[in-house]
Image 1: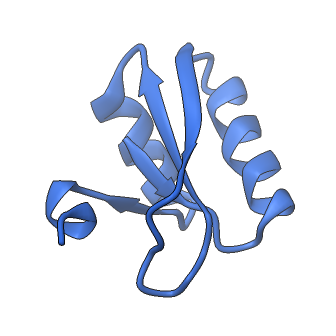
Image 2 (image 1 turned 180 degrees about the horizontal axis):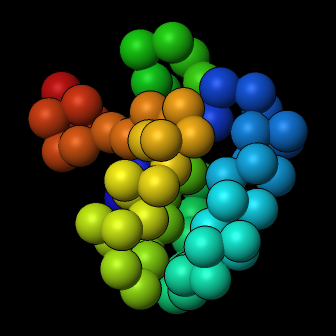
Length: 72
């Protein structure tokens, strides 16, 4: 999953806290150098249960990007 962090460091904290409280595992993560439409930082996450985690993050107001959003 690729998450757009609209609030910078506070957005990162909120994203990770959301996943922690849901008790889902993050196998690894890394920042993307691709820019979003809104010029916000992007974080790629490899998650234990991607469908569950992305649904949860969307409920918390995060924008989840898909392949079409990242392709040029």
